[in-house]
Image 1 (tube, rainbow, N blue to C red):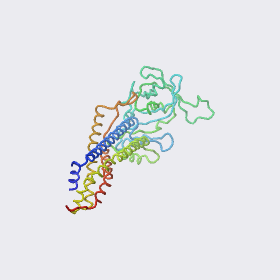
Image 2: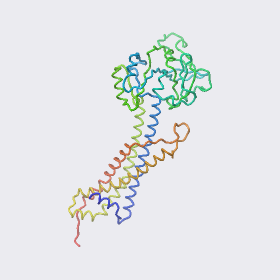
Image 3: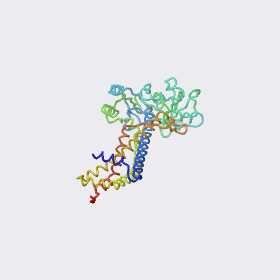
Image 4: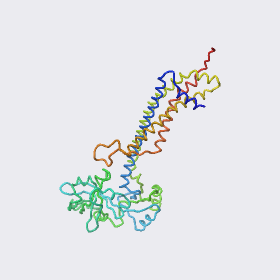
Length: 407
C-alpha cells in the first residue's frame, strides 16, 4: 500500500506545475550525478588495470630478496625445493646494481639487471620489445636490452650500431687508498634490443646476462640480488608467499606483486576514493532539489494526509509513504544514470570517443573498465542520500495535524 500511494503521488498531476518540474529536475540531477560517478570510477579502473598490466610485465608474481644486505645465497637444493612448491611455474635468478654507462662522451647512470635464461618465463618484457630483439648474449659476447628512453639518452642505435657500451661498477672490498681506476670494474655490452613498458623502467633499466654482472661484482655462482618467481594462473599470491616463507624461513624477504608496488597501488586507490567522496558531496547538493520537491508535495497533499489519519493511518505509515516517494525519485534517477554512464563507457570502450592528447601515451583513448562493485556502491550511495533527503519532508508530513471541517 505504501508504494501504491507513493507511485500515485509521483505520477499524479499537481495543482502547481512547479512541483512536477522540480521533481523531474531532481531526477535529472541524480541521473547526471550517477552517470558521472560511474564514468569517473570506470576511468580510474581503466587506468588502474593499465598500470597493473604494465607493472606485471616487469615485476614478477613473487620476489624473494634478502631480509638484510644486498645479496642472498640459494643453494641448488633450495632452488629445487622452490621449483617443486605448488603454484610455482618458474623462477629466475637476478642480480641488480647501479652502474655508469658510457657510449660516446657523456656517461649515464642506469640500473643493470642481470637475468638468466628463465627470465622470459617469469616476466613479459620480451613481448614489449620495440626495436631489435631480446638477447642477453653469453660468455662469448654479452648483450643488453635497454629501455627506450635510456637508448635515446645514450644515443645508441640497437639495430645498426656495432659499438659496445662500456659499463663501470664499484668493486667489492676496495682499499681506501687505491686510485679511482682501480676502484671500478668495467666490461662491455653489445646493444641488442629496446623495450618500452613504462617510463620508470624505460629510463633506467638495462637487462643483460647474470654472469656478466656476477663477474663485474665479483659474486659467487649461487649469489644473487633476488629470485623472481612466476605463479600459476589463478593462484593466490598470498598463499604462495606463505608456502615459500615457511620453506625458506625468516632470513628471506618474500613479496607479492602488490607488496613490491604497495605505495603505487595505495596512491591509485586513494585518488579513486577521493574523487568518489567529492562527487558524492555534489550528489548531496543535488539532493536539495528533492527536499524542495517533497516538501511542496506534502503541502499539496495536506488534505489527503488528514483523511488518511482520520481513517486510522498511523504517523509511521504517512512517513513511509513520503520516504517511498523520495526513493522513487532517487531510483528513477539512479536507473537513468546507470544507463547514461554505462552506455557512455561502452561507447568509449568500443569507439574511443575521448582521445588522449599527445603521442607519448601507450594508449590512444581514455581506458575504461566497469566493475559491478562500483554500480553497487553508487546504488547504495544514492539510496542513502535519497533517504536522508526524504526524511525531513516525510517527518513533516507525519506530524501534520488532523483538521477536518464540517461541510
